[in-house]
Length: 256
Image 1: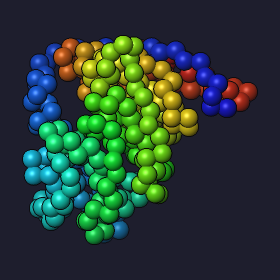
Image 2: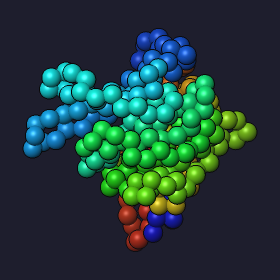
Image 3: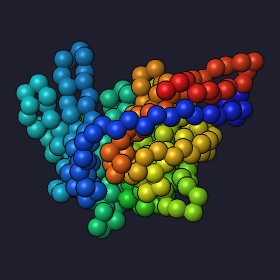
Protein backbone atom coordinates (compact mmCIF):
# COMPACT_ATOMS: atom_id res chain seq x y z
CA UNK A 1 0.00 0.00 0.00
CA UNK A 2 1.67 3.12 -1.23
CA UNK A 3 -0.11 5.54 1.07
CA UNK A 4 1.52 4.18 4.22
CA UNK A 5 5.07 5.50 4.32
CA UNK A 6 7.43 6.65 7.00
CA UNK A 7 9.97 9.12 5.69
CA UNK A 8 13.45 9.82 6.96
CA UNK A 9 16.30 11.41 5.09
CA UNK A 10 20.04 11.28 5.29
CA UNK A 11 21.70 14.09 3.40
CA UNK A 12 25.20 15.13 2.54
CA UNK A 13 26.33 18.35 0.94
CA UNK A 14 29.58 18.38 -1.00
CA UNK A 15 31.42 21.51 -2.03
CA UNK A 16 32.74 21.19 -5.55
CA UNK A 17 35.10 24.10 -5.04
CA UNK A 18 34.12 25.94 -8.20
CA UNK A 19 32.34 29.21 -8.72
CA UNK A 20 29.09 28.74 -10.62
CA UNK A 21 27.69 31.13 -13.20
CA UNK A 22 25.29 33.92 -12.23
CA UNK A 23 21.55 33.34 -12.16
CA UNK A 24 20.85 35.28 -15.35
CA UNK A 25 23.58 33.49 -17.26
CA UNK A 26 22.24 30.10 -16.19
CA UNK A 27 18.77 30.98 -17.39
CA UNK A 28 19.86 32.53 -20.67
CA UNK A 29 22.51 30.04 -21.68
CA UNK A 30 22.39 26.83 -19.70
CA UNK A 31 18.73 25.91 -19.97
CA UNK A 32 18.54 26.22 -23.76
CA UNK A 33 21.26 23.56 -23.81
CA UNK A 34 19.02 21.04 -22.02
CA UNK A 35 18.49 18.61 -24.85
CA UNK A 36 17.21 15.11 -25.29
CA UNK A 37 18.83 12.26 -27.19
CA UNK A 38 16.91 9.59 -29.06
CA UNK A 39 18.64 6.56 -30.53
CA UNK A 40 17.19 3.92 -32.83
CA UNK A 41 19.26 0.77 -32.45
CA UNK A 42 18.06 -0.95 -35.60
CA UNK A 43 18.99 1.95 -37.78
CA UNK A 44 22.06 2.81 -35.71
CA UNK A 45 20.84 6.39 -35.75
CA UNK A 46 20.77 8.91 -32.95
CA UNK A 47 19.07 12.27 -32.92
CA UNK A 48 19.48 15.08 -30.44
CA UNK A 49 16.60 17.49 -29.86
CA UNK A 50 17.88 20.90 -28.74
CA UNK A 51 15.64 23.85 -27.75
CA UNK A 52 16.89 27.00 -29.48
CA UNK A 53 15.68 29.59 -27.02
CA UNK A 54 15.93 32.77 -29.07
CA UNK A 55 14.59 31.37 -32.32
CA UNK A 56 11.51 29.72 -30.75
CA UNK A 57 12.30 26.36 -32.28
CA UNK A 58 13.82 22.95 -31.64
CA UNK A 59 16.85 21.86 -33.64
CA UNK A 60 17.11 18.19 -34.57
CA UNK A 61 20.69 16.98 -34.89
CA UNK A 62 21.77 13.77 -36.59
CA UNK A 63 24.58 12.80 -34.25
CA UNK A 64 26.17 10.39 -36.71
CA UNK A 65 26.80 13.25 -39.13
CA UNK A 66 26.82 16.10 -36.60
CA UNK A 67 24.36 18.01 -38.74
CA UNK A 68 21.09 19.80 -38.09
CA UNK A 69 18.50 17.95 -40.15
CA UNK A 70 15.39 19.86 -39.06
CA UNK A 71 14.25 23.00 -37.23
CA UNK A 72 10.81 22.66 -35.68
CA UNK A 73 8.90 25.86 -34.80
CA UNK A 74 7.38 25.76 -31.31
CA UNK A 75 6.00 28.48 -29.05
CA UNK A 76 7.91 31.20 -27.26
CA UNK A 77 11.32 30.60 -25.67
CA UNK A 78 11.63 26.81 -25.34
CA UNK A 79 13.83 25.72 -22.46
CA UNK A 80 13.88 21.95 -21.98
CA UNK A 81 12.87 18.77 -23.78
CA UNK A 82 12.17 15.16 -22.81
CA UNK A 83 11.47 12.21 -25.11
CA UNK A 84 9.07 9.36 -24.39
CA UNK A 85 10.75 6.00 -23.70
CA UNK A 86 9.55 4.59 -27.03
CA UNK A 87 11.09 7.55 -28.86
CA UNK A 88 7.82 8.56 -30.52
CA UNK A 89 7.32 12.02 -29.02
CA UNK A 90 9.34 14.92 -27.61
CA UNK A 91 7.83 17.22 -24.99
CA UNK A 92 9.18 20.78 -25.00
CA UNK A 93 8.60 23.46 -22.33
CA UNK A 94 7.85 26.91 -23.78
CA UNK A 95 8.63 29.35 -20.99
CA UNK A 96 7.36 32.48 -22.70
CA UNK A 97 9.71 34.31 -20.38
CA UNK A 98 8.79 37.72 -21.79
CA UNK A 99 5.52 37.08 -23.61
CA UNK A 100 4.02 34.25 -21.55
CA UNK A 101 3.31 31.32 -23.85
CA UNK A 102 3.27 29.00 -20.79
CA UNK A 103 2.84 25.82 -22.80
CA UNK A 104 4.30 22.46 -23.75
CA UNK A 105 4.76 21.50 -27.41
CA UNK A 106 4.52 17.84 -28.36
CA UNK A 107 6.67 16.83 -31.34
CA UNK A 108 6.11 13.66 -33.36
CA UNK A 109 9.67 12.44 -33.88
CA UNK A 110 8.73 10.45 -36.99
CA UNK A 111 7.60 13.54 -38.88
CA UNK A 112 9.34 16.20 -36.75
CA UNK A 113 6.12 18.20 -36.54
CA UNK A 114 4.21 19.63 -33.58
CA UNK A 115 1.10 17.53 -33.00
CA UNK A 116 -0.19 19.16 -29.80
CA UNK A 117 0.25 22.29 -27.69
CA UNK A 118 -0.71 22.00 -24.03
CA UNK A 119 -1.32 24.91 -21.66
CA UNK A 120 0.43 24.57 -18.31
CA UNK A 121 1.42 26.89 -15.44
CA UNK A 122 3.42 30.08 -15.55
CA UNK A 123 7.05 29.88 -16.75
CA UNK A 124 7.37 26.13 -17.40
CA UNK A 125 11.00 25.11 -17.07
CA UNK A 126 11.76 21.44 -16.52
CA UNK A 127 10.11 18.33 -17.94
CA UNK A 128 10.52 14.62 -17.20
CA UNK A 129 8.58 11.60 -18.43
CA UNK A 130 7.76 8.55 -16.33
CA UNK A 131 9.62 5.35 -17.26
CA UNK A 132 6.40 3.78 -18.58
CA UNK A 133 5.84 6.82 -20.81
CA UNK A 134 2.37 7.48 -19.40
CA UNK A 135 2.91 10.91 -17.87
CA UNK A 136 5.03 14.03 -18.31
CA UNK A 137 5.85 16.13 -15.24
CA UNK A 138 6.42 19.84 -15.93
CA UNK A 139 7.74 22.35 -13.36
CA UNK A 140 6.08 25.78 -13.45
CA UNK A 141 8.50 28.09 -11.71
CA UNK A 142 6.32 31.17 -11.39
CA UNK A 143 3.19 29.20 -10.47
CA UNK A 144 4.92 27.16 -7.74
CA UNK A 145 3.39 24.02 -9.21
CA UNK A 146 3.96 20.91 -11.30
CA UNK A 147 1.64 20.06 -14.20
CA UNK A 148 1.05 16.36 -14.86
CA UNK A 149 0.26 15.55 -18.49
CA UNK A 150 -1.32 12.30 -19.64
CA UNK A 151 0.73 11.50 -22.73
CA UNK A 152 -2.04 9.35 -24.25
CA UNK A 153 -4.48 12.29 -24.36
CA UNK A 154 -2.08 15.24 -23.97
CA UNK A 155 -4.34 16.65 -21.27
CA UNK A 156 -3.21 18.03 -17.90
CA UNK A 157 -4.70 15.58 -15.41
CA UNK A 158 -3.26 17.08 -12.21
CA UNK A 159 -1.62 20.23 -10.92
CA UNK A 160 0.56 19.66 -7.86
CA UNK A 161 1.21 22.68 -5.61
CA UNK A 162 4.84 22.88 -4.53
CA UNK A 163 4.92 25.18 -1.53
CA UNK A 164 7.70 25.71 0.98
CA UNK A 165 6.18 27.43 3.99
CA UNK A 166 5.44 31.08 3.31
CA UNK A 167 8.05 31.35 0.57
CA UNK A 168 7.70 30.99 -3.18
CA UNK A 169 9.17 27.65 -4.15
CA UNK A 170 10.13 28.24 -7.77
CA UNK A 171 10.26 24.60 -8.94
CA UNK A 172 12.92 24.50 -11.61
CA UNK A 173 14.17 21.03 -12.50
CA UNK A 174 12.47 17.66 -12.15
CA UNK A 175 13.63 14.04 -12.17
CA UNK A 176 11.69 10.79 -11.75
CA UNK A 177 12.92 7.66 -10.00
CA UNK A 178 13.61 4.63 -12.24
CA UNK A 179 10.61 2.78 -10.84
CA UNK A 180 8.37 5.77 -11.59
CA UNK A 181 7.17 6.03 -7.98
CA UNK A 182 8.44 9.54 -7.19
CA UNK A 183 9.20 12.84 -8.89
CA UNK A 184 11.80 15.14 -7.34
CA UNK A 185 11.64 18.88 -7.96
CA UNK A 186 14.51 21.28 -7.28
CA UNK A 187 12.86 24.41 -5.85
CA UNK A 188 15.22 27.26 -6.67
CA UNK A 189 13.51 30.06 -4.76
CA UNK A 190 13.01 28.07 -1.55
CA UNK A 191 16.29 26.11 -1.59
CA UNK A 192 14.41 22.84 -1.10
CA UNK A 193 13.57 19.63 -2.90
CA UNK A 194 10.00 18.37 -3.02
CA UNK A 195 9.20 14.67 -3.38
CA UNK A 196 5.95 13.92 -5.23
CA UNK A 197 4.25 10.54 -4.97
CA UNK A 198 3.26 9.84 -8.57
CA UNK A 199 0.43 7.50 -7.49
CA UNK A 200 -1.41 10.28 -5.64
CA UNK A 201 0.29 13.36 -7.14
CA UNK A 202 0.82 14.78 -3.66
CA UNK A 203 3.99 16.12 -2.07
CA UNK A 204 5.21 13.53 0.42
CA UNK A 205 8.26 15.42 1.69
CA UNK A 206 10.04 18.75 1.36
CA UNK A 207 13.75 18.66 2.14
CA UNK A 208 16.17 21.60 2.61
CA UNK A 209 19.23 21.66 0.38
CA UNK A 210 21.85 24.26 -0.58
CA UNK A 211 21.11 27.71 -1.89
CA UNK A 212 19.17 28.01 -5.17
CA UNK A 213 19.05 24.41 -6.43
CA UNK A 214 18.70 24.18 -10.19
CA UNK A 215 19.35 20.57 -11.13
CA UNK A 216 18.38 17.16 -9.79
CA UNK A 217 19.33 13.67 -10.97
CA UNK A 218 18.51 10.19 -9.65
CA UNK A 219 20.99 7.31 -9.74
CA UNK A 220 19.98 4.29 -11.89
CA UNK A 221 19.34 2.17 -8.79
CA UNK A 222 16.99 4.85 -7.44
CA UNK A 223 18.83 5.00 -4.11
CA UNK A 224 20.35 8.48 -4.34
CA UNK A 225 19.35 11.92 -5.54
CA UNK A 226 21.99 14.52 -6.44
CA UNK A 227 21.00 18.20 -6.34
CA UNK A 228 23.11 21.04 -7.74
CA UNK A 229 22.96 24.27 -5.69
CA UNK A 230 24.00 27.31 -7.70
CA UNK A 231 24.60 30.00 -5.08
CA UNK A 232 26.19 27.79 -2.44
CA UNK A 233 28.44 26.09 -5.03
CA UNK A 234 27.57 22.68 -3.59
CA UNK A 235 25.91 19.40 -4.45
CA UNK A 236 23.45 17.92 -1.96
CA UNK A 237 23.26 14.12 -1.91
CA UNK A 238 20.28 12.21 -0.55
CA UNK A 239 20.58 8.48 -0.03
CA UNK A 240 17.65 6.34 0.96
CA UNK A 241 16.24 2.86 0.62
CA UNK A 242 12.80 1.39 0.22
CA UNK A 243 11.77 -1.77 2.01
CA UNK A 244 8.51 -3.66 1.63
CA UNK A 245 7.33 -5.16 4.89
CA UNK A 246 3.94 -6.77 5.26
CA UNK A 247 2.44 -4.74 2.46
CA UNK A 248 3.65 -1.39 3.75
CA UNK A 249 6.37 0.80 2.32
CA UNK A 250 9.01 2.34 4.56
CA UNK A 251 11.84 4.65 3.66
CA UNK A 252 14.98 4.77 5.76
CA UNK A 253 18.24 6.70 5.60
CA UNK A 254 20.77 4.88 3.51
CA UNK A 255 23.91 6.42 4.95
CA UNK A 256 26.06 9.30 3.77
